[in-house]
Length: 457
Image (cartoon, rainbow, N blue to C red):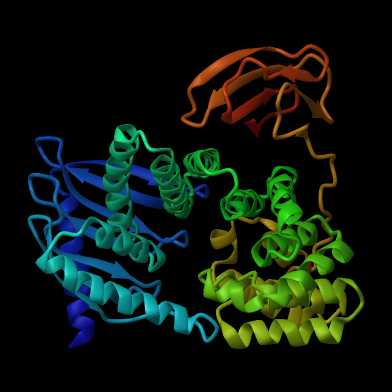
């Protein structure tokens, strides 16, 4: 009976696409990230979001005033309903959490968030208390209720801005500036989930601009840049955190990932050891569900440092925590490839691919490994020198490395609007007159066109 219900549900979710216009956002690999439908009055009729691996994530419906209305859903990656909401003209009538997702390491924190949501909904059902509304929005965001959270956050932003503009008290001004900083950081996190990278970086930078002394915000930008493989820029911000908090678990963890990818394994292990000192903090203050957790990263590092048995044991620990960890399986595949056990290596690589490694992490290296090991092809990695800007972030002049002189360029802001274009003098570009913020620098080179992210301080 349950399977019939799910089939009917999915048929009903497709009806809204008929006789309406829609706007689509895509992940970098071309898969649909978000689709918004509009009615004949150009009002939002419904919204669906998707996981980066292609499965339906959320489905929300609206009345003619663009208020949440009817039965709305959150799905897990197995296409099962995880949470269900019942709205009437914007008012939440009921929330039911059917399936709660957590790991052994973050279980306590996640269950606490679900309990918070339940209690906060009860309060807001009877009386609209703004601070309670704000707290619920943050809990919604933590639990992956992105559509609800983003809607809440933009409403909260307007209230904070009005209060900030109205105050003449320095202490109150600082309070709301910090509140806005935290809000922008949360908004950035949601945009990053949709892989709207420039919007995410813009809001993370905006958060730092509002509260530069909060190194957590600095870490969030640095860690995100590392996840995008903008290593030089990411390491700059992470080192800024380390200067003030040498044992910062999140910054050290992100640096261990960056230096692992850059094949600087000794340096990676130093930072990972520091992250281990306060490992519990990673699960208490974070989501604790990253496929590149400490066991996964250290397992690979240990192998590269010659401690293969320890590396395999750590990666198996990572799989015991999350049997669907595609990164751990990809690393184990490489270890067995190095041990010339190609059959086992091929199995791990195939399992990693089936678990969505390439789509989840936007990496193409697994295709090369599959071809090399499973098809016994003789392939090699392209080791051309990487093109990058330094210094970056920049205050005045930045130089572009590993390019020919006098190249053509176009500079865009984070919304991809053209700021200026021209030809470089030598290999340097002057950012002195450009306002602070995130920019995209498109280099028109003879052999190809590439895009670099530049942050002007």
